[in-house]
Image (cartoon, rainbow, N blue to C red):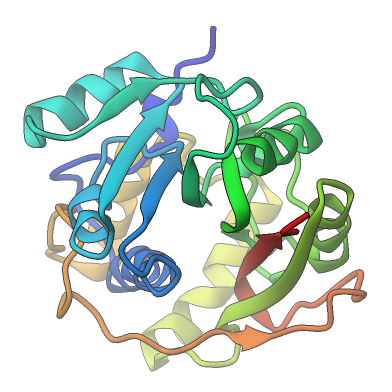
Amino acid sequence: MTDFTTVTETWGLPASPEQLTMQYARYRMAAGLMDGGTVLEVGCGAGMGLPYLEAHARTIVGGDYTMSLLQEARRNLPDANLVRMDAQRLPFRDHVFDVVLMLEMIYYVADKRAALDECRRVLKPGGKLMVCLPNRDRPDFNPSPFSTGYPNPGEIADLFGKSGFDVHVYGGFPVESESSRDRILQPLREVAVRYRLIPRSMRAKAMLKRILYGRLPPLGAVHDGMADYSEPVELDPSSRSDARYKNLYAVGSSSVS
């Protein structure tokens, strides 16, 4: 049984400014889909996004495969609705959720088609599914340990379509939009990726970021004001490669029939 704790963002872990902005962006985008409905976050990890989602929904359920992450979520969020689950076999009846979220986790799932089929099953007709993940075509892409594959825009669109979703694919965080510090560090990142010098655990990565960026704020509950937000840009879903953006987002609507 794989334990995903070492590759998951957890409470109190030092975070770079970009890391905080990316965390806020995915939950801000997700909140825009909710409209007070019933929401499931599959792969909620330590639950840092659940309070933000709860403010925009009638009911929030958070689930994860790794029990230690759910235990950490429980320590920090004693009133949260938490369930241990496998994304490929969700423990819910048909058509019970208005929105399902799979944020920064689908690349750990062995059978992605099965996971999307399960999301479609538990969604009400017309319900929404949102997925986000790093763009494997970005220049400094570094696959996470335990990952099983990172779909590109066309592959994401194919997965959604085969599971019965009408999908829109977006890109966020333009590669060329970097601070002067990032431009200086970019060649170092590319060398580190090429020679596999990037640490494998989130804690070791945090120590490296501390060296590069200095004192860093800790991760905690997602909230408005923690970072700026820019709307993602819609991409051509037929594109097989797009290196312009660091992150990819997909939003699908299940058919009403």
